[in-house]
Each structure stands twice: as C-alpha cells, then as structure tokens.
Length: 301
Image (cartoon, rainbow, N blue to C red; front, side):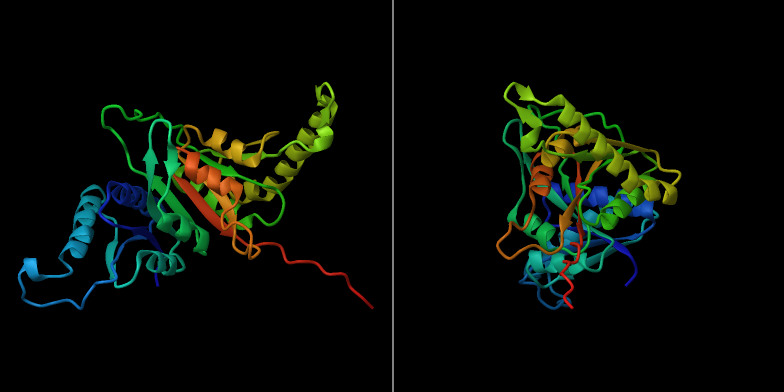
C-alpha cells in the first residue's frame, strides 16, 4: 500500500479539525490522505434505493462532507475514503499499522477542566505501532479561550535512557517538512541526594544539569548531521519529564513524545509523560511508539 496519512472521522467537530490538520501534514509530506470511518453496522452497498432507506447514508455522508471540505482547501491533494465494517478502535489500530501516521480528534474542556480524551483515542494511542497525532477542535465561541499565536516550531520530549531513534526521526522529519525549528527538551527530576536540610544543594544540581546537557548534546549530534537544514535548540531542565514537556509545548505548533511499545503486564499502558502531554498540552500531540532495549543477561561459562 502506498504511504498514507490516515484520519479517523466520526462527524464531530474534533474529527473535522483532525482532518484539516492531517490534510496539511499530508500535503507537506506529499502523501495521500485517507479518510476513515468505521461503523459495525455497515452493509454491502445497496443499489437504486432512496436515501431514506440506505443504511449507509450517514456513514457515506460523513466521508463525503469531509472530503469536500478538504479538497476545497487542498485541490491538488490525493484523498481516498474508506468505510470499514468494524468497531472504531479495531479499525483505527489496524489502519495505523499501514499508515505513516494516524490523526485523531480529541476533546477539550475549558477553562479549568483541562484536556480529556475519549476511551477510543487513548486506546488507539496505547496500541498503535506507528505514530498517532491527537488534535483538538478549534474553538471560537464566546467564553472560550481565544486562539493563541503559535511559534510554528516542533517540540520533542527526550528521556535519554533507552532507544530514541524512532522518536527523533519523526521529530526531525516533521520539523524539516514544515521548515521550522525543532526544540528538544529533557526533563530530569532531582534525586534524593540533591536535597540538604537547608534546601537544594546547588553543587549537586549544577553537576546533574551539566551531565544531562552533555548527554543531550551527544544524543543529538548525529541527528544534526543527518538534518543539517533543521535548526535545533536543546535544553535539559531539572523538573519532572512530564512537567518539562507540558511547559515546553506552551504556544508550540506540535509536541512529540515517545511511548514504549512493550510494557510489563501490570504496568500502565501509557506512561506519565504521555498522559501529561495528551491531557494538558494545548497544541496537537504526536505519540511515537519506540522499542524497549533488549534485556541483557549474564554470560555463564
């Protein structure tokens, strides 16, 4: 199958916002945009029956309306529609495995309730083997938060332990396609020995910050070489990784965070950084799955 950007549609304002975002990204990357709507009650296409008797009428209308809007703003973009007779979660997880990225809408409660997602979006994020982007609907009603001026940059949160190639490749390619700055942020919580009876031991914290910044620079060096046209800024901050990425994303165009593909059976399906990003970041959030390092075992003779 040719490379595509897939967007899940359900007719809501959130999914239409996701479709607009996905169309922009597909255009930048010169990829086909696939509009996907899943409905378990989908029936084989009927012939020559009135619309009021067509069980697929509303499903087809969702795709038709979204396609018309997208093509009005992106006349040269390749757009395909896909109606799937399945539940939305299964259809989207399967589609994500075939897509360069999958884009889903997410809902926001303003001003103080923050950011929440439906169960389907969170489950797709947790299960997908390829990047998933969550996009909030634009809000312009009276009393809602006004539109913010974006810096037009991409922010990526980096943990610096374990593999991060998939995450950095997605972030650098996205920044390159947009022609914007990539801001790399690493958050590190202070260890117990950084605290003294009078407060924080600044000698210890300065050493931690220096070591973290050095490791961050070393990690990024080969990627700067691979993408010499991408302007990169990097910073290591001594706060929790979750807090670091949410702060860095304020006003950004896109936040990119990583998710481990394999977790222990009883561990949470989404880590603290991803949870903070998708619940509190105001910009679109891309969640990129990456592999865990292979366990090392002692060699016995």
